[in-house]
Image (cartoon, rainbow, N blue to C red; front, side, top):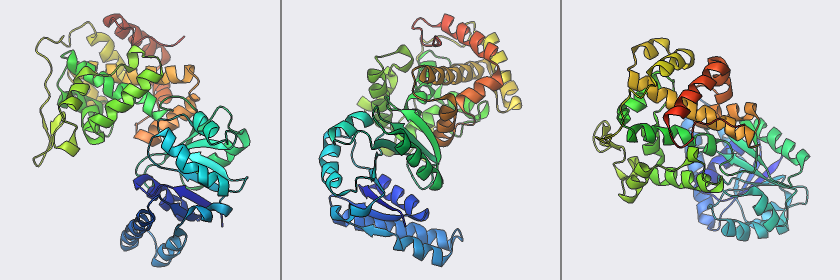
Length: 402
């Protein structure tokens, strides 16, 4: 039976442990606090019991799965085929915690980090194992979310990366390969979904509820950008935005939203604080953030291009036909910002278009991958509408690569 050691028994580490055990791997779960690892396995057991009760697996399957999970210590890593680090996002802490594991692991063991924001290459160098270190970025909750970003460090062995991709696929995950760049795929390409929504609000095009409705009804997105950022937490979302923006040399496309940063400074972080863009204290959310009175209107010469674009890009033609001019402009601006960022990511060598499409569908549940969507719309329509949008702004954020 193949064996995986997992360092970190928080929500992510426990989730990965459940995924691996479900796939038939023996799991050694380690935490600086042994009681945390034990509690994590107890939590997994409760989830498995619920699955059995709902008929998703048999009682015998549940018992067999639990027998693969072990609360362990570092010395138990001596026969691991794979080691995954899933602790706090601090490079110094990761290095200090992983170094004792390196001394115990077999020389053939793969070393993977679940980091979402740190350099895989630097981590591999600092632990002295650049060739066998890679990124294996799961999404939370790991047992439910289908994506794993397999991240290639500058010195990662190609054959090792192939093995990691095969392992992730055998665990039931969809794999998107990418380079070791800030934000990898999802945390970069998804930025404009939130940022352009805030810009539409700041320009006075529409209020948040109208913007959210446009992206759901016309675009087929499961959640609008404002309700999604309220769920994520504006503190988390802005921190990711600022990190990606800084590390990519501050392109205007990824510039943080002053409005969103004010929400953070005011302590209105979203659902977890009770209020963000929406007030979540009642039975249903109530929008509390309003467009500025002096913002621009929806009649900025974009009605024609937006209407044509929506006809080609919509998931639901009836919803697009019933939408207001403001909603069509909102949808056009936000979706094209995402499609353009995907093009920039491919241009910058982050990943191949096919991997970007997999990542955005499996990682954030987009109804289509950006490149497939662009192809469905038609490259000429995408290019012409991008030019119209670029002419309407003064910061160049709709400029395509090349």
